[in-house]
Image (tube, rainbow, N blue to C red):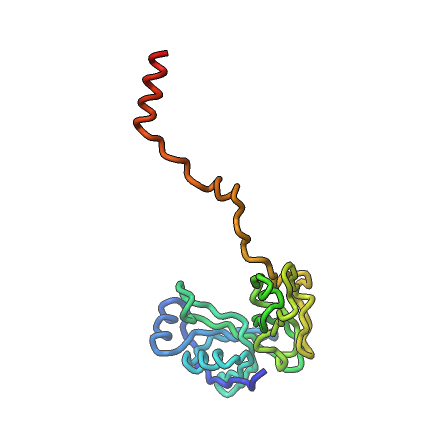
Length: 214
């Protein structure tokens, strides 16, 4: 895990939608710091510095609130309706010696053995919940798919985790499968999908005349 990101927080005197909108217009993000049986504190953070830190994979953040430094992790990020812009941040106080449960993204690595055989790899989950010290939180968990053949699958319990990281997610949770690309359709299936031949008006009139004559 990369070094801790340090941010200076401003204390929010006012909360609510209007105040939050005003803050974001000033390049600040509303946030709350809570946990460790201490009173929650409403703060604001520099949006650009936080976003850049997130892009670098930072999860552990030292927040300076007045003269006090709080070691925190990002517990939750709230986004706008389009899912693009962060509008609120939840920071939880932590101790570097304690074990915590966090959600870490999965990164598939390699080419599956089944791909040259006509298979296609499908991911069924993009995150795993793990437990570790805050200083051991991985940016992502690499999942090697190179030994996955056609008809094979990988589950959470099959993944080798970094040292000091323990799986919390159900070990039977499906992560990856490799199946064959849709096989060519049989002649019967193609015939069933073909639209019925249009009725020829002349033939229909002839048939109707014959019925009347009978």
